[in-house]
Length: 206
Image (tube, rainbow, N blue to C red):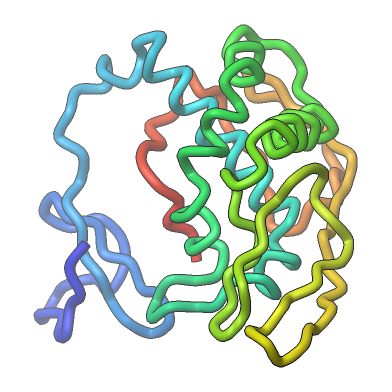
């Protein structure tokens, strides 16, 4: 994705123009090319499974958005949530191997199912999911359920306790795109059926 220093006359500062998507992030305009692959490429079983994993990962990130803000540093234009995804995308996708198949099949997936999948994976792979990565402090890994408090240790100089705002709520969702209203999940407007969405690649939200 290229950074745009100046947008020409008649050009939008956001939206689709001439095969490019313009987005504004933190006051800076960026441009990226629109996907050129045919829609059929997104409707294979493998693609639907990938999209389902992406959906579940995003739901997990949104559930813990407040906590992640406290546990990761912003790097340039990359938010703490983007940093969390960058470090943990592979592990989170592995954690959702089984649950994503249920989602694609149209089964209802509850937030407790998502939490349980990550908790089980983190318990079995104790240095796979990076929980905290703050400058000047030792890394902390998720080794079970997402905690309500994390102790950050500065090399040889003591520790600090971070009380986390997880903002968890009990919701349910399935692979057919249904989601009950009034879910109480901040910023979540619902997601579409993985079989019909074109979402690909890493998280690029903030």
